[in-house]
Image 1: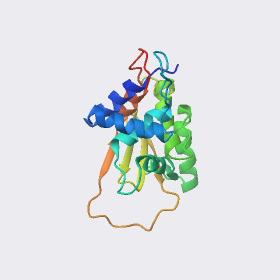
Image 2: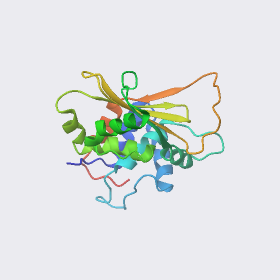
Image 3: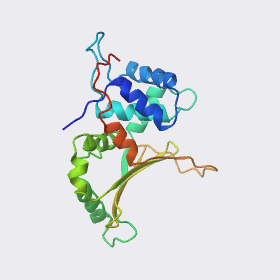
Image 4: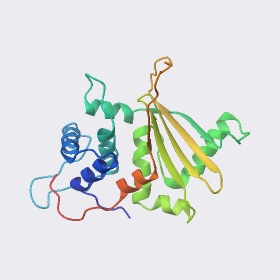
Amino acid sequence: MSVIMKANALKATVAGFDSLPLGTTADRFREMQAGKLISKGEPGRYGGVTMTNSDRVNALLACTFDPPKGESRVAYVKRFRRFELSLATYNPLRSKLSFEDNARVAFQFVEGLGIKFDDLGHALDGIVGSMRSNAFAAWEAGVHANVVAEFHGDHAVTVTIDRPQANNYAIFKFEPAKASPPVERAIERIIRFNRIVFEKLAANDETAPDQD
């Protein structure tokens, strides 16, 4: 069953991940609302809306990454969300399957989660949604699993879903549709969202009326 989170709880949650001031978080939240990337409620005591999976992911991205000079935060988040699936692989260090079969098994490995891998936005939304609906817990079946989204700068993202006790895992890589030729970077900044990030985004942190 889906759980409720209103705007103020989401602001507090994403601010807490990287100790971002609540005022800064609120400014970025309003920017996302103006760009139609986060739902906005109506005036009044009961005008608040429950944050969707996309709302929660978009708030996280907006409060984690700063766009390059000259690009709006809304456009930057949209660009991340449009990253296309470029690779799906299952147990790449141990598997002797063909490339095509390996990709097929990767999707079979996670099919119980109900995640769509059309693009990065759908994948991240799906991870949050699987935890809100308890699909992730059912898929784990009592054996702890990991999920990690690793951002390599703003040019590639890998999502790893892992059953460490069984040493089974699937990796899904996302990149821009029209990627420029590879550039050797002197410094590679990597930001990793661990399982706890998605758990907190999926949590029921607020039941009081919320107008934002």
